[in-house]
Length: 389
Figure 1 (cartoon, one colour):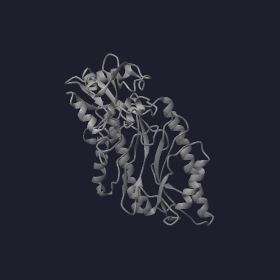
Figure 2 (tube, rainbow, N blue to C red):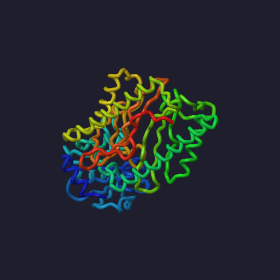
Figure 3 (spheres, rainbow, N blue to C red):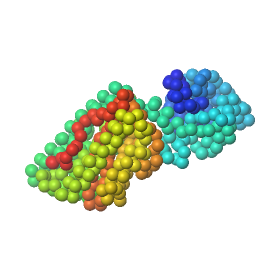
Figure 4 (cartoon, one colour):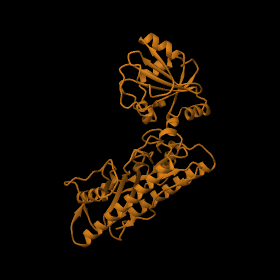
């Protein structure tokens, strides 16, 4: 528990403290952040870190040991009257307290405090403040070792893709009929040969199937892959280990050299939008301006709408990258949610604008790392043209 770091941040943000709570293991953030180890309580427990002074542990007298692994002073209550008396010592009127909630539910990933409990703690006269940005400092800011694991995962993923493309070309040249289902089987085989873990099979679609971001091939729906086919692949993986980071990309390909003009047009629109997004991020970092995930996504949407493609947007522009493919940091999202968290130095996120017309699907994704000195790095190949298979 990095109490000193937490208290430094609380002072910087003019907060009086940070409150963690749990009951029956329902609060998934407290479970993880406080390393509770899945030990569920049958009565409310609270852990309060003030901006200065010792952390405070408030527990039922029936369950007095559940926070013994954490620093701080222990207080035991018997019944709800004593609980309120204890909490009133720390949750004083006018205090601004960080809590695991998001106003309006804008950032669902930090909404682990239930509405009833939020009403209860507000009854002490405190002002709850979302802990969304605080949490990023302890789960989304990456170390150099984690960045290296991300880079190494990328080397493996691009090797899998190269072998996949070679298999497609060799199969077609050899006169063997292949389809999406056989491609899935081949990619699964190639993945099994590598020291990498994927929480799901790669997403891909051929021709109009690429216009459905949730498409999954089956033997009955599989389209034939042949010269002239369009192909989109989204693939993400992570090295084995407890402290490694995902690598997640989407690429667009064409089987054979003859590219559909509309496919080519849409590709370059999405490519240019992705370039402008990166320029937008770099500029705001260089000027020390606010950089929120929702603002990046709103900017990306405005660019696609200017091209007459607003109706072809189906998802946010990007998501946090971490120990999970969709990490706990800020997402580039003003479409599915309103993610008003800052994109902090040290964090990583995907940038993946996409358009889906019904016949054509184009999404171009790479992972962006904001370095501690506010530079932007991408640790892998960047697609600038439709790849010819």
